[in-house]
Amino acid sequence: MSKQIGDVILNVQNISLSFGGVKALSDISFNVREHEIRAIIGPNGAGKSSMLNCINGVYSPQQGQITFRGQTFSHMDSHQVAVMGVARTFQNLALFKGMSVLDNIMTGRNLRMKSNLFMQALRLGPAEREEIEHRKRVEEIIDFLEIQPYRKTPVGQLPYGLQKRVDLGRALALEPQVLLLDEPMAGMNVEEKQDMCRFILDVNDEFGTTVVLIEHDMGVVMDISDRVVVLDYGKKIGDGSPDEVRNNPEVISAYLGTGH
Image (tube, rainbow, N blue to C red; front, side, top):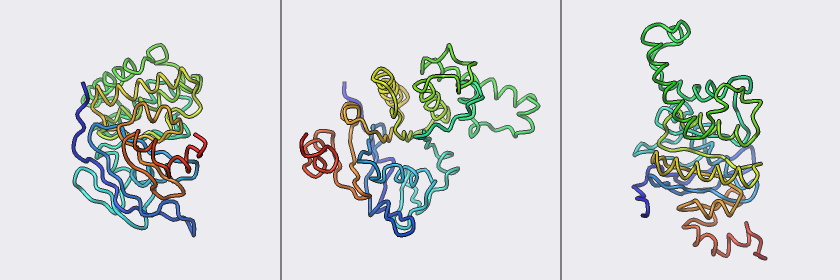
């Protein structure tokens, strides 16, 4: 059974971003449809992470706008983006190494907590009830990612592949509508990559989460993506289904090397 791809949830229009005299992105436009896995690929320095940083409000583009669920912004604010339901994982893990797996994933629930910090600290009535609810949700994520044996382990003691899984768990704890994954498989061995692919497909399938993915492993991209946008030196050189992109001469020469 093929999955149902919905309407456009995120529309990136004519985004340009410069640092000093260096153009990181030039007039980039593409859209993301609800429930799809949308990959952004390209060689190093193509502008992929800069694009994600514009979407989740870390960078302010000099030109262009981003429309999310019908609301248009010339600049997204990081906090506002998270509240609207966009979560992000990072290339370089930004986990709290001394904290347990459970506590790291709990930090992803902060935006969903209604009680103030004072009440949370003292665990007063409503705050305690709320924490129990959130903890239940976090335990479900831990089960889903198959990391139950490590719940209480400080994240810094885990192998890299499992740390990446915790990073994904923390993003899922926000219950995002759109999940931005910045090289979720970088530095992984084959087995770890296969596991991560399975989790990404399950998140997309079981939770219905829309996924925007930056990934260098072309095999992975072609296997799990519904559509692929290709950047090279900050310009868009391809956009379409994995097959269309794979057979695009400009993409072949820029990314895959003409010999492939």
